[in-house]
Length: 183
Image (tube, rainbow, N blue to C red; front, side, top):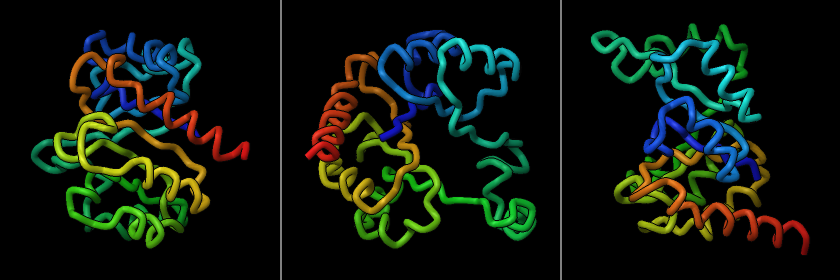
């Protein structure tokens, strides 16, 4: 199980470039970034390299008046993007948004499994850490991993307090995964 911290919303108690090493210290395997374009590419590269963490997801830039949700999500660009990427495009499946839409998470995972390339999560409501809402992560994560998904899980939530205080779920998930694979 590979878990990335979205440091655009987590570890906000620290300056942005220090969040890379803090995510490593906390036990994460990778980094997600939303809109890090205030930092230079060199500074981002150095911070990731020094922390020893890969950047596994980064939102495309936004142009507020033209692309307020990002350029990659424009319906009229769907054919150009898919053609240029030669079917290497995968779905970023967001458990938080699927749950907000009141979808059955295990059923949606199975329905979309063939095209899922990355999974993000936050609990509902509030978009906080696992265990603060109604998503039954104890059922959803094993169903996801049991389905054969072996990609990244991205923690993209707003901590209810200091980030490290709410990370109990991380060790718990790793322990459950370890027990599952060794028995």
